[in-house]
Image 1 (cartoon, rainbow, N blue to C red):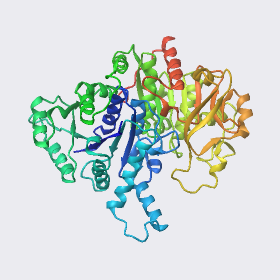
Image 2 (image 1 turned 90 degrees about the horizontal axis):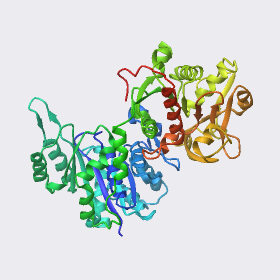
Image 3 (image 1 turned 45 degrees about the vertical axis):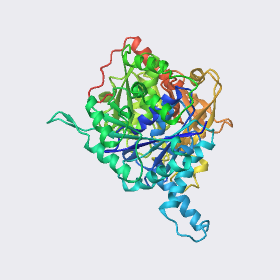
Image 4 (image 1 turned 45 degrees about the horizontal axis):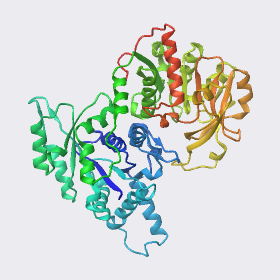
Length: 548
């Protein structure tokens, strides 16, 4: 079957859920037995989001081959249950870097380099590459930003040209827009959607379907109006009310006929009818948990949960496995520095410290680790969360009161965390960390080995600093086991406390590999330990006003 392309654009405002819609469409197609590849086009001039502040961009998602990408790729992986690569995300920065490098090398033979055709050709080559790698039935392409953005124009022009490159019958354009609600009149307004579609049509793209985002029910008369003024078939105007659970999105879009429209318009040969029964059962379980599971996530970006998007979802997946509804209290580590851990952690049944860079708030994280260790509360440390676990143990168990990471104190007398040897000659910041999948050998009988059920695993990394092996033996004598090592034994990937219900720190990011139907083993066992605390009779207060 000829590879088909579905393009997803956004209008009216940003952050209306294009990524969720694209991921949901991918799930719908996969439920019909089709193979799906997904790509994200990001118009910003950064080469990738790796050097951006989380306050600017949210979480940086890392692919298995070590590409730092947009957080929407996490949605794609979780919904469709696929593993993406560097071929799934391209930015304007990458496009222009490639073109300017070619120009300097004389590839273009002294010709003038222009947006059309040169920039658009690079973007098209990127999209066409997907059909030559694995020969997917469908390639889903999401264009970042909003129609009308100056920086997005070359990308929109490129997807317009794709209609000619692969054939009209092999392309389908989905436009996701917002229907704002005017409280004074009690009306949903269609005019912004009309203007957004007018912008698209002005550059030669006629949407084949419009997904209408709204916080309120969308009456049939509104759908008819949009169909009339935007020249779209009435059944292709798809209402999408705000959902309490994003995992309901494939079910809503399927119910609204999106799957059948795509099969019909793209002439897709579907080996199976739609089967979302397992997905539906999963969302029903999410809606009917046996009780809350209060967990504190202590981080430096806790006031922006999107900075820890995959951590949040991995906790949801793990709590669902145990028929619980995770109640996350997002705790700023600087608040713990100011008020002490009792003020912020007395309500919780488990503590997670996620990744991050820089010294701000680190002392609060170390206090949170000590709180979990001394009170026998389940603890899971991710990347930086593992490093502060090592620092806390060195200080408060070994008595090395000046122990630290050289990232935070280059003059520390006890650098229990230090810069990796292969990072010491690195000067550039972007894309130069230890990134992507690396193997890890697990110690027999360790908590980590029991969780995974296998002697060796591959996990995704994103860091520059590591456990200092000079302290491995003394920390082991103080009760900290290096339970996961690189195959050559030189890098400590996992540490755990032997005399603790569950206290595990990992140098990698297991949250990237968690799925709603298959939670990551470490998150699953962390949630099991927290659930056990609840069964043992702990009755902590629930988070007040900061839960998720």
